[in-house]
Length: 209
Image 1 (spheres, rainbow, N blue to C red):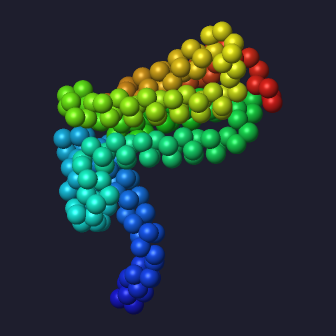
Image 2: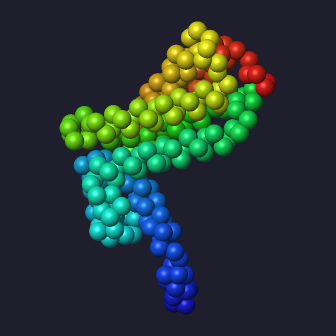
Image 3: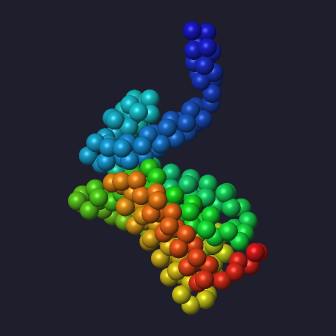
């Protein structure tokens, strides 16, 4: 009981802005988890608020509409994953493009991809969501492409290199779809190995290798 009281007192003393930021973070993470687990139909603001441990009113204070909440959540977590990916390879590919390819594929086989897919499917049927998700996908796609180019040490001024990088991302998305219904780990490992070899052949030796 003493621990609970101390935690409550500490939270009360925290600056209001920090508490607000923490609430927003919990809502974003809960929204992605709900989308990944329950899809669009089963993910309401009330469900997300309960999972995040906040009131529905608090959730709507940060995100007035359901569309605001879920598009912001997918974009936020996708950006976090891209940042984490760059931090795994602070010096770029460093001669190990297979490791980079493996991590890029991992981005498309986890809960963020499942959440994004749920949004895409919903947007195909709901007009009020379609424009926002289309814009979101374009932004996230551009950022993912830039990250891949950076980590693979790819020179897009060379003919065919941009298309090769985009082909890698399209392949990773396809593996993510294949992984939705069954564990595709064994086949995915073989495909990743082959794509890493193709990437090396197409892009040439990394500059800092």
